Amino acid sequence: MMASQKPSLLLYIHGFNSSPLSHKANVMANYCKEHRPDIKVLTPQLPCYPKQAAEYLLQLVNQYQSDFHIALIGSSLGGYLSTWLNNKFGFRAVVVNPAVKPYELLSDFLGPQTNPYTNENYYLEAHHIAELRDLDVEAIQQPQDFWLLLQEGDEVLDYRQAVTKFQGAKQTVEPEGDHSFVDFERYPEQIIQFLEL
Image 1 (tube, rainbow, N blue to C red):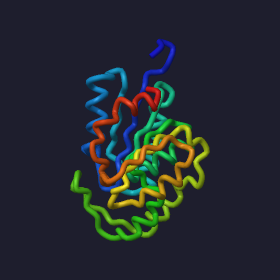
Image 2 (tube, rainbow, N blue to C red):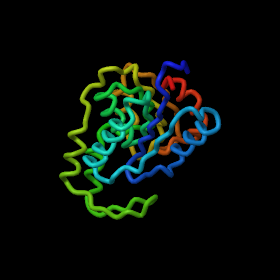
Image 3 (cartoon, rainbow, N blue to C red):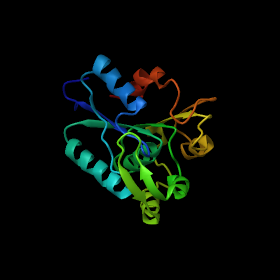
Image 4 (cartoon, one colour):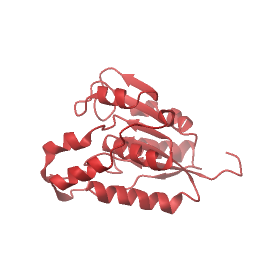
């Protein structure tokens, strides 16, 4: 890193009913701690509701953008939010088994919810699905900003939606696997390189 450049910040955005305690978040944090201590890693606990989560992410960007070079990793719903942030700010992003149409998927989850990591209880309502739809990026403007990491065995999302959505992006599509992305430990070094951190 040249002295004239801003220091690097990696913002990890977790998925639906997840947390900074997720495996992938820990893999990235531990890798940076050991190999790239110059990178500031943020893995915030997002609010449960889409509009609040988006506003919280904007607050973080506003807090750090002037002093740091920011790049993103987004998992599942975090991939959807990363796409939204890229559209606003142009941040490079690695999206892991990203949700492409979470407003369709989460329509089946209306009602009481409990985050298994935080034990927070909340209630998902129809207007929260509308909030999610409001964050949709219809067409990605700069696909070269993205690296799509997918596993075809994802039991939650149809991986083909992401292949289509991220046309023109770097894509790694692996057979089998699952929604958590099995053996994510193979990728931290390459992710940091792609994100130009």
